[in-house]
Length: 157
Image (cartoon, rainbow, N blue to C red; front, side):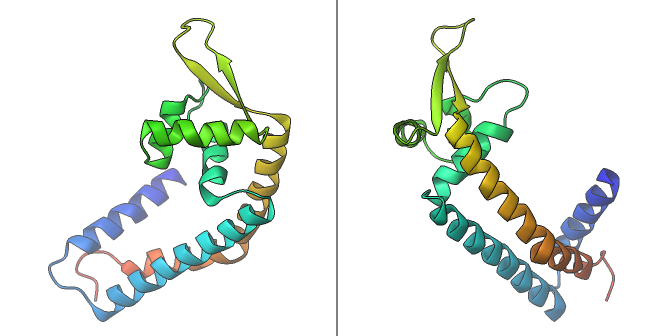
């Protein structure tokens, strides 16, 4: 399955390298971006229902799943969210005040602080993740799959 996904990505990249773009390429790209924006709008609305901003939701997701097997750090959150370190510090401060994240000292290096979701943070993230996965399965996944296939390989007309 991973090989099939990689092959599909290579097709998309190869198609993008063609010197001429077809009208169907523009249509597929426009539809692809629409599907992404639709999913993000859904996800942002679901986060708001849980009392979170989209960035707070992404931070929780990053802490939980981005840096396995070691615990996340503020630097990891900054990297995951593509924000500056000091912005990530403020974000984590707000999440900590809401009782969603805890800071834990690294037992091997006192200069490093690990981040862990609290029980409340885990519950909010789980609720949001379930909704997001349901939406991806319902709408985005089949549509995105069709769109990626529509890009075609180089030389295809």
